[in-house]
View 1 (cartoon, rainbow, N blue to C red):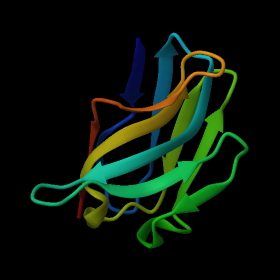
View 2: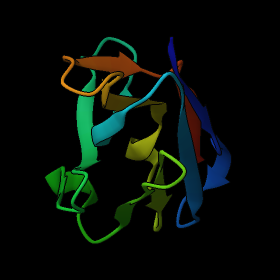
View 3: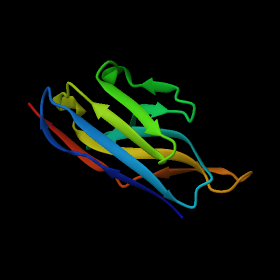
Length: 121
């Protein structure tokens, strides 16, 4: 089984910073693309940022220049450094990962349980 465990959410004032972490554990051969998504009430889950196993990144336009995604392949962990936070960044942040559990096996997609980020103005 594969588990994604997020941490680092919380309450912060506008202009502040938070760092989210997500560790992938279980029976893993390789973790490919990892990413962060967020969801607000009444809205669809949207991509915030993602990073490939090789380190290529892409970001939602709304967070470019403020958020940085990184990963530690040895720890199967992805991070999201969020700076200059705005009230519109408030939401539940979900970790996502494409995981291959065995060599030559299929790649399956997994989600974390979500962590709340609240930015007060």
